[in-house]
Image (tube, rainbow, N blue to C red; front, side, top):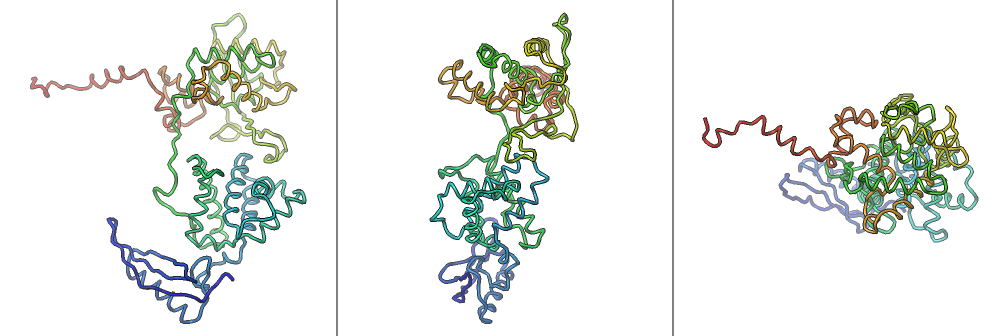
Amino acid sequence: MDTTYNVKVWKIGTRKQARGTTYTVRWTLDGREWRAPFVTRALADAFRSELVSATRRGEAFSLTTGRPVSHQSGASAVNWYDFALRFTDAQWARTSGNNRKNVAKALMTTTVVLLRAQPSSFKPIDVRRALREWAFNTKRRDSAPADVVAILRWIERNTLTMAAWEDPRKVEEVLNALATKLDGMPGAASSAKRNRRILNVAMEYAVKHRILRENPLPKGRGTSPKTSSAVDKRCLVNPAQAGALLGWIWQRPRGGRRLHAFFATIYLAGPRPEEVVAMRVRDAILPAEDAEDQWGELLFHTAQPEVGKQWTDTGDVHEERGLKGRATDDTRTVPCRPALAKILRDHIEAEELKSGDLLFPGEKGDLLAGSVFRRAWRSARGKVLTPDEYASPLGKRVYDLRHTCLTTWLNNGIPPAQVAEWAGNSVPVLLATYARCISGQLKDLQKRIEAGDDLADLYGGG
């Protein structure tokens, strides 16, 4: 049974704190204590009176929410699992593959917490996989294999109703799970914040469709983990290290010269890897061979992030998208320095590429796989860097080549607005990300400060 008549209502408790006095109503259901804090005694008295009146009427209390049944919203009539499927389907068509994958992960963790009991006939890993890969994947759900269907039917029968969200303890349990890894260790703050944002959208969806009266997630400062977008200076690659890493890749027997040009483009022009993957030969406007001291231009207008074929509408591993943070069909032009222009021109000639071809194709002429260039980069780090450098964040991700390029531009005095334009960022995002990496300008700034000051009066001067 989800209700009880075994109710005891206690006197109002008063607690004085620096931020004011709190008045707490306490009551028990079958021995389990419930609390409701209020900022004024009048509000606490009114709420306590409602509880006492409900007990005198012989009304049942919900063991899930702690409130009289008459206080419940329509949440008790809706199964969480069913709601989560509805929410997934509502979001699917208007979100990217990566977002779909993140929604599935967040709903998977939430659903495991909202099970009435842990399964005895299925392994926990199989339950999580069935939820993440099948239940919360609109495209694949109807084609789930028989063993997955059996797991999902069990989950549907054993999931709490949406009334669980009216229990603050259960809300806290879900939020803790979303911020914790499977081994019990705290997850990355960015992951916890992303999961919480997804869950917040789900709760707003429930409110909009009148399943919940209000969003149950706590609000205000301090309720969400703090994250920082600032780049760790230790990940930046200096010119000598970059030369050694790219040199090793150039000598790699299998596709080394193609990958060398790929990494050089990120290091010297600062695009995102998924933007470079999508480039066509015609997007590289290069000077003639007899004008090696001239600059060229690189045009970026498409990105091909790798998200997994089960999350894309086309069934392809990559998903074609517009540029990040820009309107559909928007473009971005980045200057191509002479050294990079020569690398790209030699690469195009060696590969015998045509204007409409991919600038950096995979071995079969298709899109370059992320697993290929990431594996090559890991191998280069292992062969070139010292053991201490390899264990450090130094160039650990291919994306760190972009971080290095943008940092170099800023440190060389390129105005932030121009760097932001070339990088495809806003100025505030650029400065928040790279402010800690800007160096070499301290003496100039000190001179500017001193030039505007007249400190003679401090020493009694005239």
